[in-house]
View 1 (spheres, rainbow, N blue to C red):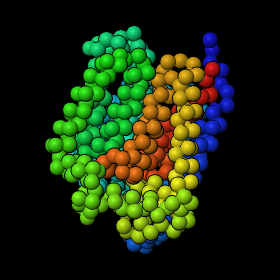
View 2 (cartoon, one colour):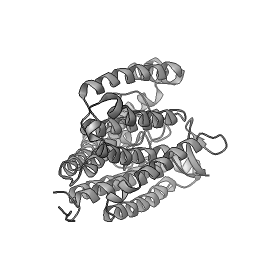
View 3 (cartoon, rainbow, N blue to C red):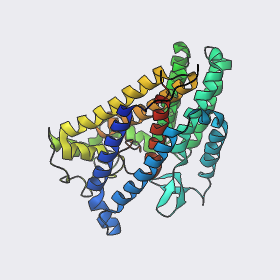
View 4 (cartoon, rainbow, N blue to C red):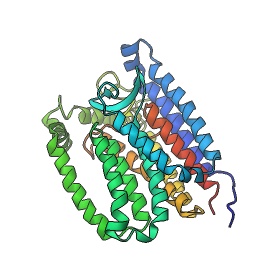
Length: 365
């Protein structure tokens, strides 16, 4: 049956634009003080966010109007390119170190994170691979291990930077695709146990990760060191109360809370807009995830369905980790809040992913 192209899912588009607008406003509110101290321009981060938002919207509309099956045709070259970039970024003198991780390629203040593009590249490839090999997926060695080994290699390269947050999102979204494709739960539970052991090994191998774990359990043990970010985040959320202190009235953005415009922007949202504002943002993400899963269920082919699941999984896992860190449920790890945090690579990639999701929704049954 030929595919019939209709209008894209308006709920996905509307929730995305609401989140993007909130992000641009909150990036300015959270970063104005920091930007003035660092660059003498209160609008520095705001202008960058606005530029990348426009670029991202253009990418979103482009992907929304291209047949998503084009991605199936070029899935392998896209993944190979992403792997090449992950290797290049690790080369001293080429990869740029920011925040203790060699995860950037670029010149001066402009750069891209190859690990961000790997998330989407892996999702596209897995959707194609699992569609072609769905009959084998219940077999551990011939069906499950090949895609998992690929994900493992990508995760290993990302951990060499190191960037645990992005690696966790990559693995989480990939496992969602593999599960939906028909993998046995027993196999996945076995791998989860092995992964937990490996995760423990990664933590023990790097003292700073162990410090983050202990700080997560009791941040007040080291309030000026490993527990500082978690404590300052809670100090931002607490005074926000029900309705918040008011837009622009944050106290923690005055050089108390690190990365207020980036990893911890949800803390500023909760401080300025309160429980109501924070809940509204979470509801917008839930709306995006719900309509994305509906798109996956009604997609006209297996590739589109798995691709939509991967994109929704990428959003869901990243939101859960970011907000979990901010409210003290998870150890601190550097990861952005999709569509809201400052950041060119993440924002552009997420809007591109939304464009693909909207494209699939145009052909939904």
